[in-house]
Amino acid sequence: MTTVQINATLNYHLPRASDVLLAVEAIPGMADQTLLTDLLKVGGDCSPLKTIEGMDGLGRRTWLHAQGRIDIRYTATATINRAPTAIAGLGTVPLSELPPAYVQYLMPSRYCPSDRHDNFVATRFDAKAAGDRVLQMAAWIHEFVEYAPGRPGNGGTATDTFISRRGVCRDFAHMLITFARAADIPARMVSAYALDINPPDFHAVAEVYLEGEWHLVDATRLVPEENLVRIAVGRDATDISFMTIFGRADMIAQSVIVERV
Image (cartoon, rainbow, N blue to C red; front, side):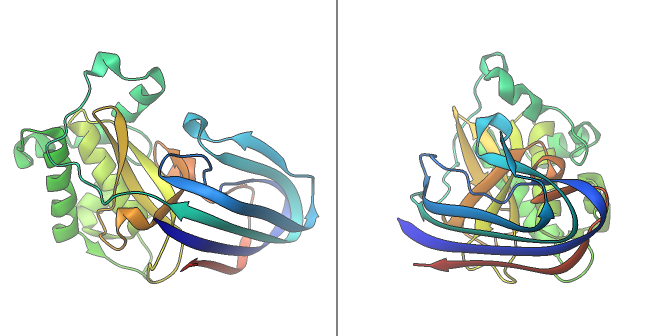
């Protein structure tokens, strides 16, 4: 078990009054991660905060309406009680027995056009067990896609990353999700706080549904899956963005620090 302290600070300027949806609070009450303390503070000219449930009933997101400078700070202490990912040999559940909310994770989405990669996946990844196929996919992505921190990513779909062969964590996650869905393996995207990631930042990974449980898989191999604290889940980056702005915002400063306690 690992205990971590999380400190995330976001300073932005909104030139016009805009709605903002935050997803920075770690998910509480999961079997493999527990929140001991957490506090979200927002300063500036903004409306009272309104909390809503996160996707799949996990965690929470927060609405605010603001203009001018806003200063957002989230602090938390969490314990992680998760074994290293071990999906080798695991299979999928019959598709007709999937929980209804998870059917969407078989389908193409905005950044994960899995229907465009059916043939590549079918001819490239041949392991019998679904878990082994996911491991093959993650290994292929790690080998053939350049991780390029500090350089602008393509910001596009998994197909764009497949062509450019470069990207950041969200692009790696999109590719793995796309490949998994093309193989009829339910997959979703997860935003997370990551211990010991370099450079420090919000992180994005994939999660696959095998034998009735979700399993984290990080194709970047930057952080062991047992060092992640989940923030939000969804179909792709559209659903897990730490800050969705319905208007325009200019970043003043941003910092994400995760440390062992």
